[in-house]
Image 1: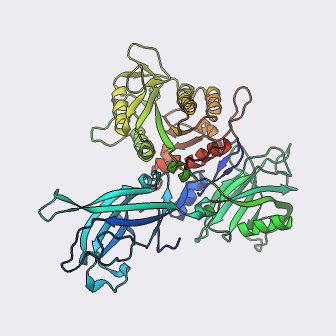
Image 2 (image 1 turned 120 degrees about the vertical axis):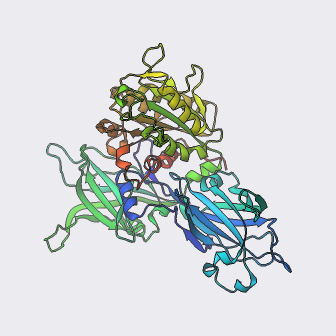
Image 3 (image 1 turned 60 degrees about the vertical axis):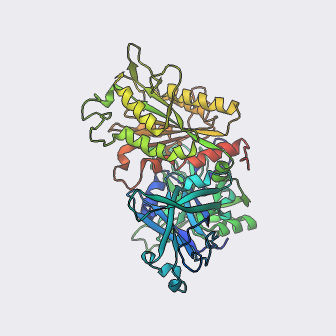
Length: 580
Protein backbone atom coordinates (compact mmCIF):
# COMPACT_ATOMS: atom_id res chain seq x y z
CA UNK A 1 0.00 0.00 0.00
CA UNK A 2 3.01 2.24 -0.23
CA UNK A 3 3.36 2.00 3.53
CA UNK A 4 6.31 1.10 5.71
CA UNK A 5 5.88 1.20 9.45
CA UNK A 6 7.07 -0.44 12.61
CA UNK A 7 5.03 -3.55 13.36
CA UNK A 8 5.08 -3.08 17.11
CA UNK A 9 3.15 -0.81 19.37
CA UNK A 10 5.25 2.26 19.99
CA UNK A 11 7.49 1.89 16.97
CA UNK A 12 8.11 5.00 14.93
CA UNK A 13 5.98 5.38 11.86
CA UNK A 14 7.85 5.51 8.60
CA UNK A 15 7.23 5.02 5.10
CA UNK A 16 6.42 3.87 4.74
CA UNK A 17 -4.29 -7.84 -14.54
CA UNK A 18 -3.15 -6.73 -18.06
CA UNK A 19 -3.46 -3.02 -18.50
CA UNK A 20 -2.88 -0.66 -21.34
CA UNK A 21 -2.40 2.66 -19.60
CA UNK A 22 -0.46 3.75 -16.55
CA UNK A 23 -1.67 7.14 -15.41
CA UNK A 24 0.28 9.65 -13.36
CA UNK A 25 -1.32 10.45 -10.03
CA UNK A 26 -2.24 14.06 -10.69
CA UNK A 27 -1.87 16.82 -13.21
CA UNK A 28 0.24 18.68 -10.67
CA UNK A 29 1.88 15.54 -9.33
CA UNK A 30 5.18 15.90 -7.51
CA UNK A 31 8.25 15.28 -9.64
CA UNK A 32 11.25 13.48 -8.17
CA UNK A 33 12.73 16.65 -6.72
CA UNK A 34 9.51 17.68 -5.00
CA UNK A 35 8.96 14.09 -3.86
CA UNK A 36 12.41 14.06 -2.31
CA UNK A 37 11.70 17.42 -0.65
CA UNK A 38 8.54 15.96 0.87
CA UNK A 39 10.25 12.81 2.04
CA UNK A 40 13.19 14.70 3.56
CA UNK A 41 10.70 16.30 5.95
CA UNK A 42 9.05 13.04 6.87
CA UNK A 43 6.01 13.40 4.59
CA UNK A 44 5.86 9.87 3.32
CA UNK A 45 2.68 9.71 1.32
CA UNK A 46 0.43 6.85 0.40
CA UNK A 47 0.81 5.68 -3.20
CA UNK A 48 -1.36 2.77 -4.27
CA UNK A 49 -2.02 1.49 -7.75
CA UNK A 50 -5.72 1.38 -8.67
CA UNK A 51 -6.95 -0.49 -11.75
CA UNK A 52 -9.97 1.30 -13.20
CA UNK A 53 -12.44 -0.52 -15.47
CA UNK A 54 -15.27 1.18 -17.38
CA UNK A 55 -18.60 0.16 -18.83
CA UNK A 56 -21.64 2.14 -19.98
CA UNK A 57 -25.36 1.69 -20.51
CA UNK A 58 -28.12 3.40 -22.48
CA UNK A 59 -25.79 5.48 -24.62
CA UNK A 60 -27.36 7.68 -27.26
CA UNK A 61 -27.38 6.20 -30.77
CA UNK A 62 -25.64 8.65 -33.07
CA UNK A 63 -25.32 6.40 -36.14
CA UNK A 64 -28.05 6.16 -38.78
CA UNK A 65 -27.69 2.57 -39.99
CA UNK A 66 -26.09 1.03 -36.90
CA UNK A 67 -25.51 1.60 -33.21
CA UNK A 68 -22.77 3.90 -31.89
CA UNK A 69 -19.15 2.76 -31.71
CA UNK A 70 -18.13 4.18 -28.31
CA UNK A 71 -14.71 4.94 -26.84
CA UNK A 72 -14.03 6.45 -23.40
CA UNK A 73 -11.30 8.92 -22.48
CA UNK A 74 -10.11 9.49 -18.91
CA UNK A 75 -8.78 12.86 -17.72
CA UNK A 76 -7.41 14.24 -14.49
CA UNK A 77 -8.61 17.74 -13.68
CA UNK A 78 -5.96 20.04 -12.23
CA UNK A 79 -6.44 22.79 -9.68
CA UNK A 80 -6.60 25.34 -12.47
CA UNK A 81 -9.31 23.41 -14.28
CA UNK A 82 -7.08 22.07 -17.05
CA UNK A 83 -7.60 18.48 -18.16
CA UNK A 84 -4.70 16.06 -18.43
CA UNK A 85 -5.50 13.01 -20.56
CA UNK A 86 -4.59 9.78 -18.79
CA UNK A 87 -5.70 7.27 -21.39
CA UNK A 88 -8.28 5.93 -23.84
CA UNK A 89 -10.20 2.68 -24.05
CA UNK A 90 -10.55 0.66 -27.22
CA UNK A 91 -13.51 1.26 -29.57
CA UNK A 92 -16.44 -1.14 -29.07
CA UNK A 93 -18.38 -1.59 -32.32
CA UNK A 94 -22.17 -1.30 -32.55
CA UNK A 95 -22.94 -1.08 -28.84
CA UNK A 96 -25.00 1.21 -26.65
CA UNK A 97 -23.92 -0.71 -23.52
CA UNK A 98 -20.18 -1.26 -23.99
CA UNK A 99 -17.90 -3.07 -21.56
CA UNK A 100 -14.43 -1.86 -22.35
CA UNK A 101 -11.55 -4.30 -21.82
CA UNK A 102 -8.69 -1.83 -21.71
CA UNK A 103 -7.98 -0.72 -18.13
CA UNK A 104 -6.39 2.36 -16.59
CA UNK A 105 -3.82 2.22 -13.80
CA UNK A 106 -4.18 5.34 -11.66
CA UNK A 107 -1.94 6.13 -8.70
CA UNK A 108 -4.14 6.89 -5.70
CA UNK A 109 -2.75 9.60 -3.40
CA UNK A 110 -4.72 9.95 -0.20
CA UNK A 111 -3.45 13.43 0.63
CA UNK A 112 -4.72 14.97 -2.61
CA UNK A 113 -8.17 15.46 -4.14
CA UNK A 114 -7.96 13.70 -7.48
CA UNK A 115 -10.76 14.87 -9.76
CA UNK A 116 -11.47 12.48 -12.64
CA UNK A 117 -13.36 13.44 -15.80
CA UNK A 118 -14.68 10.90 -18.32
CA UNK A 119 -15.64 11.70 -21.92
CA UNK A 120 -17.40 9.19 -24.17
CA UNK A 121 -17.22 9.49 -27.98
CA UNK A 122 -18.80 7.74 -30.95
CA UNK A 123 -15.88 6.97 -33.26
CA UNK A 124 -16.70 7.39 -36.93
CA UNK A 125 -16.34 4.27 -39.11
CA UNK A 126 -13.59 5.80 -41.26
CA UNK A 127 -11.30 6.09 -38.22
CA UNK A 128 -11.79 2.63 -36.75
CA UNK A 129 -8.58 1.16 -38.16
CA UNK A 130 -6.50 3.91 -36.58
CA UNK A 131 -4.79 3.49 -33.21
CA UNK A 132 -7.00 5.19 -30.61
CA UNK A 133 -4.04 7.26 -29.42
CA UNK A 134 -3.85 8.87 -32.86
CA UNK A 135 -7.54 9.75 -33.08
CA UNK A 136 -8.42 13.45 -33.18
CA UNK A 137 -11.21 13.77 -30.65
CA UNK A 138 -12.68 16.86 -32.32
CA UNK A 139 -13.43 14.67 -35.36
CA UNK A 140 -15.53 12.22 -33.28
CA UNK A 141 -19.10 12.65 -32.05
CA UNK A 142 -19.28 13.57 -28.38
CA UNK A 143 -21.76 11.39 -26.48
CA UNK A 144 -21.43 12.73 -22.95
CA UNK A 145 -19.27 13.31 -19.92
CA UNK A 146 -19.19 12.51 -16.21
CA UNK A 147 -16.90 13.39 -13.30
CA UNK A 148 -16.08 12.27 -9.76
CA UNK A 149 -13.18 12.10 -7.33
CA UNK A 150 -11.06 8.98 -7.04
CA UNK A 151 -11.85 8.89 -3.31
CA UNK A 152 -15.57 8.59 -4.09
CA UNK A 153 -14.88 5.34 -5.96
CA UNK A 154 -12.55 3.73 -3.42
CA UNK A 155 -14.95 4.52 -0.55
CA UNK A 156 -17.69 2.35 -2.11
CA UNK A 157 -17.98 -1.08 -0.52
CA UNK A 158 -18.60 -2.54 -3.99
CA UNK A 159 -15.75 -0.42 -5.40
CA UNK A 160 -18.25 0.54 -8.11
CA UNK A 161 -19.64 4.00 -8.83
CA UNK A 162 -22.40 4.76 -11.37
CA UNK A 163 -22.50 8.25 -12.90
CA UNK A 164 -24.94 9.90 -15.28
CA UNK A 165 -23.45 10.93 -18.59
CA UNK A 166 -24.62 14.31 -19.84
CA UNK A 167 -23.97 16.70 -22.70
CA UNK A 168 -24.94 20.26 -23.52
CA UNK A 169 -27.51 20.57 -26.27
CA UNK A 170 -26.90 22.60 -29.40
CA UNK A 171 -29.81 24.81 -28.35
CA UNK A 172 -27.49 26.63 -25.98
CA UNK A 173 -25.44 26.59 -22.77
CA UNK A 174 -27.23 25.33 -19.70
CA UNK A 175 -29.45 22.95 -21.69
CA UNK A 176 -28.06 19.63 -20.49
CA UNK A 177 -29.39 16.29 -21.61
CA UNK A 178 -28.69 12.93 -19.99
CA UNK A 179 -27.10 10.52 -22.40
CA UNK A 180 -26.65 7.27 -20.51
CA UNK A 181 -24.78 5.94 -17.50
CA UNK A 182 -21.10 5.26 -16.90
CA UNK A 183 -20.08 2.51 -14.47
CA UNK A 184 -16.63 2.76 -12.90
CA UNK A 185 -15.04 -0.17 -11.09
CA UNK A 186 -11.79 0.24 -9.13
CA UNK A 187 -9.60 -2.50 -7.76
CA UNK A 188 -6.38 -2.15 -5.84
CA UNK A 189 -3.48 -3.91 -7.52
CA UNK A 190 -2.09 -7.07 -5.90
CA UNK A 191 1.38 -5.50 -5.64
CA UNK A 192 -0.03 -2.78 -3.36
CA UNK A 193 -0.98 -5.46 -0.82
CA UNK A 194 2.32 -7.38 -0.85
CA UNK A 195 4.41 -6.44 2.18
CA UNK A 196 7.92 -7.49 3.11
CA UNK A 197 8.55 -8.06 6.81
CA UNK A 198 12.13 -7.33 7.83
CA UNK A 199 14.11 -7.51 11.06
CA UNK A 200 17.51 -5.87 10.65
CA UNK A 201 20.49 -5.66 12.98
CA UNK A 202 24.04 -4.32 12.87
CA UNK A 203 27.26 -5.38 14.56
CA UNK A 204 30.37 -3.49 15.69
CA UNK A 205 29.09 0.02 15.01
CA UNK A 206 31.52 2.87 15.61
CA UNK A 207 31.07 5.24 18.54
CA UNK A 208 30.28 8.84 17.66
CA UNK A 209 29.37 10.05 21.16
CA UNK A 210 32.06 11.21 23.57
CA UNK A 211 30.80 9.66 26.80
CA UNK A 212 28.47 6.92 25.57
CA UNK A 213 27.78 4.49 22.77
CA UNK A 214 25.98 5.56 19.61
CA UNK A 215 22.18 5.82 19.36
CA UNK A 216 21.66 4.12 15.97
CA UNK A 217 18.70 4.06 13.60
CA UNK A 218 18.31 2.99 9.96
CA UNK A 219 16.92 4.86 6.96
CA UNK A 220 15.98 2.84 3.87
CA UNK A 221 15.81 4.79 0.59
CA UNK A 222 14.93 3.87 -2.96
CA UNK A 223 16.82 5.25 -5.94
CA UNK A 224 14.59 6.81 -8.59
CA UNK A 225 15.26 6.56 -12.30
CA UNK A 226 16.69 10.08 -12.21
CA UNK A 227 19.15 9.03 -9.49
CA UNK A 228 17.48 10.82 -6.58
CA UNK A 229 17.47 9.02 -3.24
CA UNK A 230 13.98 8.99 -1.68
CA UNK A 231 13.62 7.77 1.96
CA UNK A 232 10.81 5.23 2.29
CA UNK A 233 11.38 3.72 5.72
CA UNK A 234 12.96 4.55 9.07
CA UNK A 235 13.47 2.40 12.17
CA UNK A 236 13.22 3.49 15.77
CA UNK A 237 16.27 4.91 17.60
CA UNK A 238 18.04 2.47 19.95
CA UNK A 239 19.95 4.01 22.85
CA UNK A 240 23.61 3.26 23.61
CA UNK A 241 23.92 0.20 21.38
CA UNK A 242 26.80 -0.83 19.11
CA UNK A 243 25.07 -4.10 18.18
CA UNK A 244 21.47 -2.95 17.63
CA UNK A 245 18.58 -5.17 16.58
CA UNK A 246 15.60 -3.10 15.49
CA UNK A 247 11.95 -4.06 15.72
CA UNK A 248 10.22 -5.50 12.70
CA UNK A 249 9.43 -3.13 9.85
CA UNK A 250 6.87 -3.55 7.09
CA UNK A 251 7.99 -2.44 3.66
CA UNK A 252 5.55 -2.41 0.76
CA UNK A 253 6.94 -3.87 -2.45
CA UNK A 254 4.74 -1.35 -4.27
CA UNK A 255 6.58 1.50 -2.58
CA UNK A 256 9.99 0.04 -3.42
CA UNK A 257 9.06 -0.65 -7.05
CA UNK A 258 10.13 -4.29 -7.32
CA UNK A 259 12.37 -6.82 -5.60
CA UNK A 260 15.17 -5.81 -7.97
CA UNK A 261 14.90 -2.05 -7.45
CA UNK A 262 18.06 -0.53 -5.89
CA UNK A 263 17.90 0.43 -2.22
CA UNK A 264 20.29 2.25 0.09
CA UNK A 265 20.29 1.36 3.79
CA UNK A 266 22.00 3.99 5.93
CA UNK A 267 22.81 3.69 9.62
CA UNK A 268 22.88 6.97 11.55
CA UNK A 269 23.76 8.03 15.08
CA UNK A 270 20.83 10.06 16.39
CA UNK A 271 21.47 13.67 17.48
CA UNK A 272 18.70 15.79 18.99
CA UNK A 273 19.74 18.77 16.84
CA UNK A 274 18.80 16.83 13.73
CA UNK A 275 22.39 16.58 12.44
CA UNK A 276 22.70 12.82 12.57
CA UNK A 277 26.11 11.15 12.05
CA UNK A 278 26.43 8.57 9.27
CA UNK A 279 27.78 5.33 10.75
CA UNK A 280 27.81 3.51 7.41
CA UNK A 281 25.62 2.30 4.58
CA UNK A 282 24.99 -0.62 2.24
CA UNK A 283 23.35 -0.81 -1.17
CA UNK A 284 21.04 -3.76 -1.80
CA UNK A 285 17.81 -4.81 -3.46
CA UNK A 286 15.02 -6.65 -1.65
CA UNK A 287 16.22 -9.76 -3.46
CA UNK A 288 19.71 -9.09 -2.08
CA UNK A 289 18.36 -8.72 1.45
CA UNK A 290 16.44 -11.98 1.02
CA UNK A 291 19.70 -13.70 0.03
CA UNK A 292 21.54 -12.29 3.07
CA UNK A 293 18.81 -13.81 5.24
CA UNK A 294 18.88 -17.19 3.49
CA UNK A 295 22.68 -17.62 3.83
CA UNK A 296 22.77 -15.98 7.30
CA UNK A 297 25.72 -13.73 6.49
CA UNK A 298 26.30 -10.02 6.99
CA UNK A 299 27.17 -7.22 4.59
CA UNK A 300 29.93 -4.75 5.48
CA UNK A 301 28.90 -1.13 5.83
CA UNK A 302 30.92 1.52 4.04
CA UNK A 303 31.43 5.28 4.16
CA UNK A 304 31.19 6.96 0.72
CA UNK A 305 34.42 8.49 -0.52
CA UNK A 306 34.82 12.24 -0.30
CA UNK A 307 35.83 14.31 -3.32
CA UNK A 308 39.56 14.10 -3.97
CA UNK A 309 40.04 10.66 -2.42
CA UNK A 310 40.13 8.67 -5.66
CA UNK A 311 36.51 7.76 -5.02
CA UNK A 312 37.49 4.80 -2.84
CA UNK A 313 34.74 3.93 -0.39
CA UNK A 314 35.90 3.22 3.16
CA UNK A 315 34.78 -0.32 4.04
CA UNK A 316 34.02 -0.75 7.74
CA UNK A 317 34.09 -3.78 10.03
CA UNK A 318 30.48 -2.95 10.93
CA UNK A 319 28.01 -5.32 9.29
CA UNK A 320 24.29 -5.41 8.47
CA UNK A 321 22.35 -8.65 9.06
CA UNK A 322 18.84 -9.66 8.01
CA UNK A 323 17.38 -11.72 10.88
CA UNK A 324 13.97 -12.02 9.22
CA UNK A 325 12.71 -11.75 5.66
CA UNK A 326 9.20 -12.76 4.65
CA UNK A 327 6.57 -11.61 2.19
CA UNK A 328 2.91 -11.45 3.13
CA UNK A 329 -0.39 -10.05 1.98
CA UNK A 330 -1.50 -7.31 4.39
CA UNK A 331 -4.78 -5.47 4.73
CA UNK A 332 -4.29 -2.05 3.17
CA UNK A 333 -5.64 1.40 3.97
CA UNK A 334 -8.08 1.07 1.07
CA UNK A 335 -9.29 -2.28 2.40
CA UNK A 336 -10.44 -0.51 5.57
CA UNK A 337 -12.14 2.29 3.63
CA UNK A 338 -13.96 -0.23 1.46
CA UNK A 339 -14.87 -2.16 4.61
CA UNK A 340 -16.79 0.81 5.97
CA UNK A 341 -14.24 2.80 7.97
CA UNK A 342 -14.57 6.58 7.90
CA UNK A 343 -12.15 9.40 8.69
CA UNK A 344 -13.77 12.08 10.85
CA UNK A 345 -12.38 15.61 10.69
CA UNK A 346 -12.04 17.97 13.69
CA UNK A 347 -10.47 21.43 13.92
CA UNK A 348 -9.14 23.65 16.74
CA UNK A 349 -8.19 27.29 16.08
CA UNK A 350 -5.83 29.54 18.05
CA UNK A 351 -7.53 32.76 19.21
CA UNK A 352 -4.67 34.09 21.34
CA UNK A 353 -3.86 37.81 21.28
CA UNK A 354 -0.50 37.25 19.56
CA UNK A 355 -2.46 36.79 16.31
CA UNK A 356 -3.14 40.56 16.29
CA UNK A 357 -6.36 42.53 16.08
CA UNK A 358 -8.60 40.71 13.53
CA UNK A 359 -9.86 44.06 12.25
CA UNK A 360 -6.37 45.13 11.12
CA UNK A 361 -4.72 43.91 7.87
CA UNK A 362 -1.52 42.80 9.63
CA UNK A 363 -3.45 40.30 11.80
CA UNK A 364 -3.17 36.60 11.07
CA UNK A 365 -6.96 36.50 11.59
CA UNK A 366 -7.73 39.37 9.22
CA UNK A 367 -10.68 38.59 6.92
CA UNK A 368 -9.81 40.15 3.57
CA UNK A 369 -12.86 41.81 1.95
CA UNK A 370 -11.55 40.65 -1.43
CA UNK A 371 -12.16 37.06 -0.36
CA UNK A 372 -8.50 36.08 -0.26
CA UNK A 373 -8.21 33.51 2.56
CA UNK A 374 -5.85 34.01 5.48
CA UNK A 375 -3.52 31.24 6.63
CA UNK A 376 -6.11 29.79 9.04
CA UNK A 377 -8.72 29.63 6.29
CA UNK A 378 -6.28 28.11 3.80
CA UNK A 379 -5.37 25.31 6.20
CA UNK A 380 -9.04 24.53 6.91
CA UNK A 381 -9.96 24.57 3.22
CA UNK A 382 -7.04 22.43 2.08
CA UNK A 383 -7.03 19.77 4.81
CA UNK A 384 -10.81 19.70 5.20
CA UNK A 385 -11.19 19.65 1.43
CA UNK A 386 -9.43 16.27 1.33
CA UNK A 387 -10.85 14.68 4.49
CA UNK A 388 -14.50 15.62 3.85
CA UNK A 389 -14.77 12.88 1.22
CA UNK A 390 -14.10 10.23 3.88
CA UNK A 391 -16.77 11.45 6.33
CA UNK A 392 -20.33 10.52 5.38
CA UNK A 393 -22.33 12.96 7.55
CA UNK A 394 -19.85 15.86 7.18
CA UNK A 395 -20.58 17.10 10.69
CA UNK A 396 -17.27 18.37 12.05
CA UNK A 397 -16.40 19.20 15.69
CA UNK A 398 -14.83 22.67 15.73
CA UNK A 399 -13.26 24.46 18.70
CA UNK A 400 -11.37 27.60 19.52
CA UNK A 401 -8.82 28.12 22.29
CA UNK A 402 -7.03 31.00 23.99
CA UNK A 403 -9.91 33.52 23.91
CA UNK A 404 -12.42 35.07 26.26
CA UNK A 405 -16.04 34.53 25.18
CA UNK A 406 -18.41 37.42 25.88
CA UNK A 407 -18.77 37.99 29.65
CA UNK A 408 -16.73 34.90 30.44
CA UNK A 409 -13.25 33.80 31.56
CA UNK A 410 -10.51 32.76 29.14
CA UNK A 411 -11.37 29.39 27.60
CA UNK A 412 -8.89 26.91 26.23
CA UNK A 413 -11.57 24.85 24.48
CA UNK A 414 -14.81 26.55 23.42
CA UNK A 415 -17.28 25.50 20.73
CA UNK A 416 -16.62 27.52 17.60
CA UNK A 417 -20.34 27.67 16.78
CA UNK A 418 -21.09 29.55 20.03
CA UNK A 419 -23.22 26.74 21.43
CA UNK A 420 -22.79 25.51 24.98
CA UNK A 421 -24.31 22.11 24.13
CA UNK A 422 -22.70 20.80 20.94
CA UNK A 423 -19.48 21.36 19.02
CA UNK A 424 -20.35 20.19 15.51
CA UNK A 425 -20.86 22.34 12.41
CA UNK A 426 -22.16 21.36 8.96
CA UNK A 427 -19.43 20.89 6.38
CA UNK A 428 -16.30 22.88 5.61
CA UNK A 429 -18.46 25.91 4.86
CA UNK A 430 -19.90 25.60 8.36
CA UNK A 431 -16.40 25.70 9.86
CA UNK A 432 -15.55 28.80 7.85
CA UNK A 433 -18.75 30.57 8.89
CA UNK A 434 -18.31 29.65 12.58
CA UNK A 435 -14.68 30.83 12.48
CA UNK A 436 -15.62 34.22 11.00
CA UNK A 437 -18.46 34.65 13.49
CA UNK A 438 -16.25 33.74 16.46
CA UNK A 439 -13.73 36.44 15.53
CA UNK A 440 -16.38 39.06 16.33
CA UNK A 441 -17.82 37.34 19.40
CA UNK A 442 -14.73 36.59 21.48
CA UNK A 443 -11.82 38.62 22.83
CA UNK A 444 -8.39 37.34 21.90
CA UNK A 445 -6.39 36.47 25.02
CA UNK A 446 -3.96 33.67 25.95
CA UNK A 447 -1.86 31.72 26.77
CA UNK A 448 -1.49 29.03 24.07
CA UNK A 449 -2.60 25.70 25.55
CA UNK A 450 -3.27 22.52 23.53
CA UNK A 451 -4.09 20.07 26.31
CA UNK A 452 -7.80 20.89 26.58
CA UNK A 453 -8.66 20.52 22.87
CA UNK A 454 -6.59 17.34 22.52
CA UNK A 455 -8.37 15.84 25.52
CA UNK A 456 -11.77 16.77 24.03
CA UNK A 457 -10.88 15.18 20.69
CA UNK A 458 -9.55 12.04 22.39
CA UNK A 459 -12.75 11.78 24.43
CA UNK A 460 -14.87 11.78 21.26
CA UNK A 461 -12.61 9.10 19.71
CA UNK A 462 -12.79 7.00 22.89
CA UNK A 463 -16.59 7.19 23.00
CA UNK A 464 -16.70 6.12 19.35
CA UNK A 465 -14.66 3.01 20.19
CA UNK A 466 -17.06 2.21 23.06
CA UNK A 467 -19.94 2.33 20.54
CA UNK A 468 -18.04 -0.03 18.21
CA UNK A 469 -18.10 2.57 15.44
CA UNK A 470 -15.80 2.12 12.47
CA UNK A 471 -14.23 5.56 12.65
CA UNK A 472 -10.79 7.13 12.84
CA UNK A 473 -10.45 10.79 13.87
CA UNK A 474 -8.16 13.57 12.69
CA UNK A 475 -7.70 16.78 14.71
CA UNK A 476 -6.29 19.80 12.88
CA UNK A 477 -4.77 22.39 15.25
CA UNK A 478 -3.86 25.75 13.71
CA UNK A 479 -1.74 28.01 15.90
CA UNK A 480 0.51 31.07 15.68
CA UNK A 481 2.60 30.63 18.79
CA UNK A 482 4.69 28.49 21.04
CA UNK A 483 2.66 26.40 23.48
CA UNK A 484 3.07 27.15 27.17
CA UNK A 485 1.80 23.78 28.43
CA UNK A 486 4.37 21.56 26.72
CA UNK A 487 4.38 18.80 29.35
CA UNK A 488 0.59 18.85 29.73
CA UNK A 489 0.34 18.61 25.94
CA UNK A 490 2.75 15.66 25.92
CA UNK A 491 0.61 13.96 28.57
CA UNK A 492 -2.51 14.50 26.45
CA UNK A 493 -0.78 13.25 23.29
CA UNK A 494 0.49 10.11 25.06
CA UNK A 495 -3.04 9.33 26.24
CA UNK A 496 -4.45 10.08 22.78
CA UNK A 497 -2.04 7.60 21.16
CA UNK A 498 -4.24 4.79 22.50
CA UNK A 499 -7.38 5.92 20.68
CA UNK A 500 -8.13 6.16 16.91
CA UNK A 501 -6.84 9.72 16.53
CA UNK A 502 -4.15 11.58 14.60
CA UNK A 503 -3.19 15.20 15.29
CA UNK A 504 -2.14 17.62 12.55
CA UNK A 505 -0.56 20.93 13.59
CA UNK A 506 -0.09 23.93 11.30
CA UNK A 507 2.10 26.75 12.57
CA UNK A 508 1.17 30.12 11.05
CA UNK A 509 3.13 33.36 11.32
CA UNK A 510 6.81 33.87 12.10
CA UNK A 511 7.13 32.32 15.57
CA UNK A 512 9.85 29.87 16.57
CA UNK A 513 8.14 26.48 16.38
CA UNK A 514 11.02 24.39 17.74
CA UNK A 515 8.84 22.96 20.53
CA UNK A 516 6.23 21.89 17.97
CA UNK A 517 8.87 19.75 16.27
CA UNK A 518 9.48 18.02 19.61
CA UNK A 519 5.84 16.89 19.52
CA UNK A 520 6.33 15.41 16.04
CA UNK A 521 8.09 12.08 16.57
CA UNK A 522 9.59 12.29 13.07
CA UNK A 523 11.87 15.04 14.36
CA UNK A 524 12.99 13.29 17.55
CA UNK A 525 12.15 10.60 20.07
CA UNK A 526 8.71 9.31 21.01
CA UNK A 527 6.74 11.41 23.48
CA UNK A 528 6.87 10.58 27.18
CA UNK A 529 4.32 11.59 29.82
CA UNK A 530 4.97 12.99 33.30
CA UNK A 531 4.60 9.47 34.73
CA UNK A 532 7.18 8.05 32.31
CA UNK A 533 4.68 6.40 29.99
CA UNK A 534 5.75 6.43 26.33
CA UNK A 535 3.32 7.09 23.47
CA UNK A 536 2.17 3.80 21.95
CA UNK A 537 2.58 5.25 18.44
CA UNK A 538 3.37 8.43 16.52
CA UNK A 539 0.14 10.42 16.06
CA UNK A 540 1.47 13.93 15.38
CA UNK A 541 2.43 15.70 12.18
CA UNK A 542 3.62 19.33 12.30
CA UNK A 543 4.39 21.75 9.47
CA UNK A 544 5.14 25.49 9.52
CA UNK A 545 2.86 27.21 7.02
CA UNK A 546 5.70 29.50 5.90
CA UNK A 547 7.65 26.48 4.57
CA UNK A 548 4.90 25.90 2.00
CA UNK A 549 4.62 29.38 0.54
CA UNK A 550 6.31 28.37 -2.73
CA UNK A 551 3.17 26.45 -3.67
CA UNK A 552 5.08 23.33 -4.79
CA UNK A 553 3.50 21.33 -1.96
CA UNK A 554 0.11 22.00 -0.40
CA UNK A 555 -0.67 22.09 3.31
CA UNK A 556 -2.81 18.97 2.85
CA UNK A 557 -0.02 17.05 1.12
CA UNK A 558 2.42 17.90 3.90
CA UNK A 559 0.08 17.12 6.78
CA UNK A 560 -1.87 14.12 5.50
CA UNK A 561 0.94 12.09 3.98
CA UNK A 562 1.56 10.11 7.19
CA UNK A 563 -2.09 9.64 8.16
CA UNK A 564 -2.62 6.27 6.40
CA UNK A 565 0.50 4.90 8.09
CA UNK A 566 -0.72 6.08 11.51
CA UNK A 567 -4.15 4.59 10.77
CA UNK A 568 -2.65 1.20 9.87
CA UNK A 569 -0.34 1.19 12.89
CA UNK A 570 -3.39 1.62 15.15
CA UNK A 571 -5.42 -1.09 13.40
CA UNK A 572 -2.63 -3.65 13.17
CA UNK A 573 -1.48 -3.18 16.77
CA UNK A 574 -5.03 -4.05 17.90
CA UNK A 575 -5.60 -6.85 15.43
CA UNK A 576 -8.52 -5.00 13.82
CA UNK A 577 -9.41 -6.30 10.36
CA UNK A 578 -11.54 -4.52 7.75
CA UNK A 579 -15.13 -5.69 7.43
CA UNK A 580 -14.76 -7.19 3.97
